[in-house]
Image (cartoon, rainbow, N blue to C red):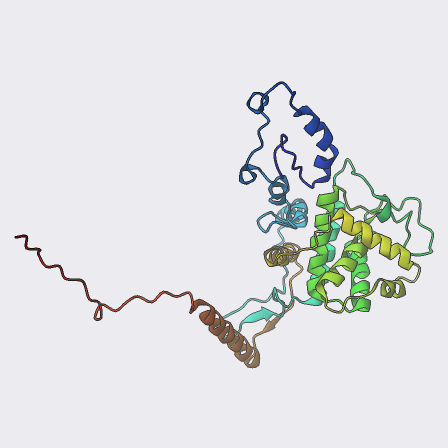
Length: 341
């Protein structure tokens, strides 16, 4: 926080590197006054918080910034729609169900209770677009995520392991195996994607065929500990991935946290944004959530939940409501003319 002339330097790593050079340039001479040097410190309220400004463009921190995976998928979605238009195929699934006056179709996924299977499918699809549409110039590859240096199995890593993009089904099987064995929830999958995009933004790296498994593993490991009350221990992942050691898992978790600058907070607005963007991704890729006709029992249940929420918000609004005074009991002061003798 602060301008370049301030002694208060932001916690950003880039600013820390140049902190000494910036402060040296503003060191005044002994013969000059503070007004002559022009290095007067600003009031703290007038300084710009650089990290907060960058946060506005970081989707994992700011609810108004668009998610990275959704923007990376736009190119492929446009190509698919263009191909369907050229081949005269209507977009969307042929067997898609639509609501009518007599029947209402709903899926069983909500922002508070997402469908586990389809949420994992959407997260795997988002990771797939991250890998497929990564920066062509290539960015820094950290050793802790390199599968050649830290393999997840004893099988020999092929020499071209970093050349071929994984298929969406391969990513889905890897994530589903971890979630099924560790009994993780669908909310944990959404938080995993938030941490993954936060890592790519903070560390300025790309997810690629050489590091995607270990990045996803680190994000799942951290999300399960932050979200679930009864978190899975690192040694438990060694039972799922037989050839990985506890020391490797501990080091992966430690470096993942350091690269996130220990920012593991996920606001509810960010979580909701990722959930609805995943639904938009599913809709654009014909990966619709399963629809079921609204039954009488479920309709009564939804109505009861709606009434409960309505009563709850009524109770919250009641103390802050200002009552207007009745005009019947309103008495105005009467003024009598003063007599000056």
